[in-house]
Amino acid sequence: MGELFAREKAEVAPGAVLVPGWLDVGQQVGLLATCRAWARPPAGMRTVRTPGGGTMSAKQVGLGWHWYPYRYARHVVDGDGSPVKPFPPWLNKLATQALEAAYGSAAPTETYDIGLINFYDRSARMGMHQDKEEASDAPVISMSLGDTCVFRFGNPHSRRRPYKDIKLRSGDLFVFGGPSRMAYHGVPKVYSGSAPAELELDGRVSITLRVSGFANAGNLDRGLPESMSCEATG
Ligand SMILES: O=C(O)CCC(=O)C(=O)O
Ligand SMILES: [Fe+2]
Image (cartoon, rainbow, N blue to C red; front, side, top):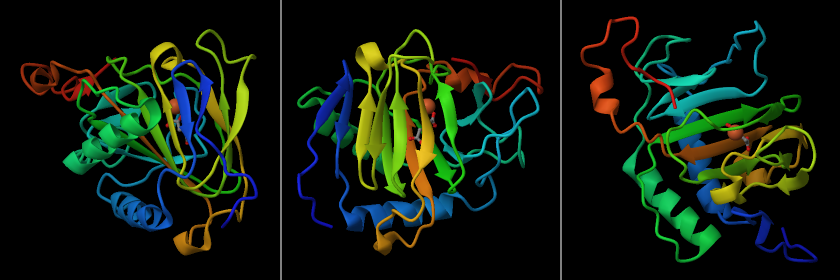
């Protein structure tokens, strides 16, 4: 759909860059089909339970490492117990392209190895939080598919103001690194029915890519008691 005023690339905060319309509709349709395959069991999309007894309204599936409140594992330890689906090498290439699009020539130094896919129905939200279970300060890369949302991007110190509310639409890329890597962020609203028709999606899907920095990951499955194996904290 044409825009009266083209949305432009913008630095929302130092190190946090929005690249509107980074993925064309064909790429969005392709990525969404892949997300649908990732969502299938085993190690499929699940409802995340928080230690306080609540549930997250956005449903999740992980790639490479399984995130659950508030650490990573190699298996879906809070679900069907299956090994997490692999993080495909082509996603690391996409991460490299995303960093180039956001930051220009800055060459990525680390290999991306975590994918987190969130599905939001019309009433789902995500509260303000930091992505802090990783052991790397490499930028977090996020891509949006489907319905437009309000993405609240704050500061590294508290979940309160100052923050900026930006709209993320299908195909948008948002990267936060450097001084913004630990900024609080959340999704207070999804605009139901706003997805491009080609996606045939009622809701919003986000794909976030991260670097684990778990350099000793190879050791985790060795020499640890069974109850502790396959787990890592950032
Ligand atoms: O859905 C989004 O855009 C944000 C997801 C997010 O913050 C997360 O998975 O940690
Ligand atoms: Fe996050």
